[in-house]
Image (cartoon, rainbow, N blue to C red):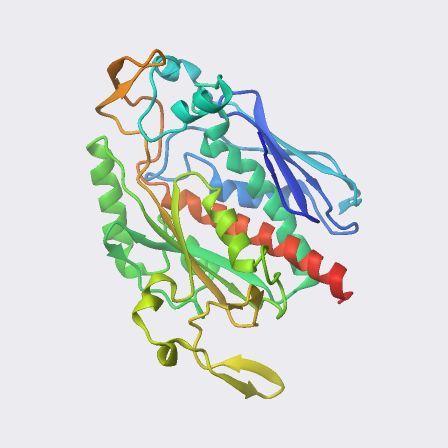
Length: 361
């Protein structure tokens, strides 16, 4: 079961939702990068459950421990191991799932592939696995700050069902996003989104939506031209997150409605810098960053666990019914924002180190 990502900045996550803990090992982090547990904790606190009235009530502090790879507040260049212990796990809430497959979860496919699974909270398929990613990305963010000081990654909730946020990717700030519990950049839709999530939760149901992400200040030349195109690796990173079902960059699917004359991004000079008049390419051309903001969107499905009976089958392939139990998000979008930022920074950090290894710059 592969749990690794990256070529030069490599991570390997470990742990199950209701096991002893979850975490990550990072290999390839450069030495002498300032790092302490508070750098990581800040990002984990944005991801953790129980942080607001619209997230799962599971009460986890998600306190991180750096086990190796640092000394006197700096990275050593050796593997960095980070552990977060599970405290508020309640496996008894999932006992019925030991014999019955939850609709749209990984229960059946894990059994079909491996012949075994941890049914307690979904085990390895749980979104709790993303703790390791977010922890590793906190380090990637520090590396990026060191190598590309102008680079900034920001993600926000673009839509929940048909409720759409109007956000300017060029001016939005982290403060704008973190100023509300749904993490959208449009204050006009905050209350509507919160009300929708509360209403759907009261019905024992769930909803989905989209997250938009911008990378500003990315250097030109990051990415590879064939199989490891920057947008391809970003798509893989995003679609590896739980509940994701779609990825588009730049004009995305709406670009199919344009002609070439309308869609082409015309070049011009801004002093000594090459710019484009439009950004339908989303900051990536030929798999390589062109210096414009990288802009993409990810679709998240409604949370699979809902608190009403649904038809399903058992492990012995008998038709039955199952009602969701445990503690779950009625909408994953608010907590997925830091996950999207994390996967973006992990991808960019790996590609930036690869670019420097190739060019020496």
